[in-house]
Length: 224
Image (cartoon, rainbow, N blue to C red; front, top):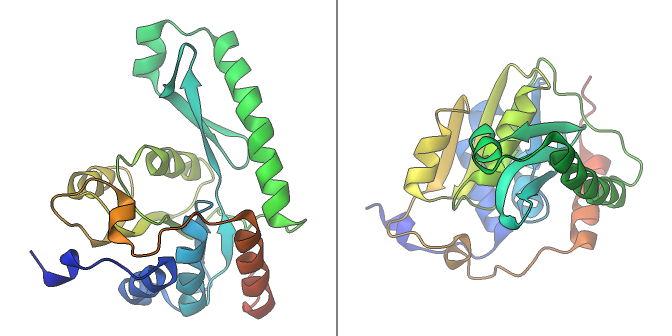
């Protein structure tokens, strides 16, 4: 095992700098977009977007909990009104379209609330024809990132890259079947939780998300 896999990151910013070093081949390209999964993915994605001189945006994903088993995901909704369903779960539990719509409406309201709160009127970055780098602070089961990859595909990018500072080895490998590239800086064994690989894993606040997006918007190079 590489020695790096034994060391926790100081915080999400340090983790982001380590991730940026692994992604430097994408620096300076006008077709690259960095998408962060809020909230914890934003402070990781910020130094990546700064280092690559790429636009930084959010990609929100909300799990659709199965009626009666809300902890079990029957699918997810994502930014831009995109819905991804787990057909196996839907069919197994016999979930009706009406039941799916009811859960989706509830989660869509929360997704829209967060979008408005975080973006503060800024438009989302177009993804069609671009290289999209999806970033979170880590991968455990990977279910949220999997939904994000499938949802981003519906926006017609040319390439989707999953990039995280740390992830469970099996999850990083499994995601490679869905993303064009998966970058996991550290894949420690054993792996039980993302938080154990950060010395500071305090919850990212809504205000920190807003501040980082504002800061990047002030300094970013305009891209078409």
